[in-house]
Length: 131
Image 1: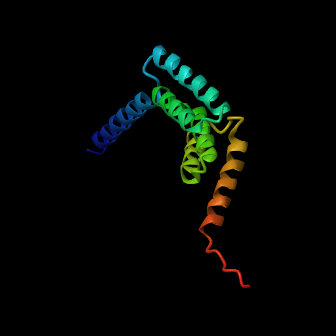
Image 2 (image 1 turned 180 degrees about the vertical axis):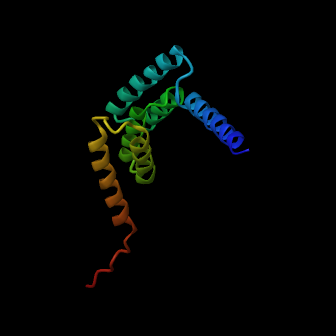
Image 3 (image 1 turned 90 degrees about the horizontal axis):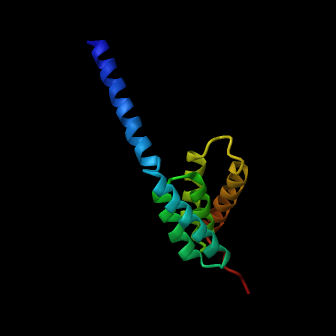
């Protein structure tokens, strides 16, 4: 009975792993090509200061190919739009999803700490000035 439960658990874990891989991996080479097009469009729009449109492009690319680099770019767009809660969420997801060896990880950790600090400052009650 224990062996049967163990086999059932292994099958369940394998099925979950396959389902997760299907969600995270692009469906085809065409998806990767389309994601790259969205990425490049997002970068160009970001450089022009059109952060809302860049955000849409990066999000569309991430839907096609959920790669951590998209999360960094989404986080940057949210920062530029002063939407710190969503920026924090994107950086946290990046740090969760990106490999430990990713060379951009230290900078992402530093930016996340800055975002956290700014969010904490924003939560503090303001003192009234005396005249």
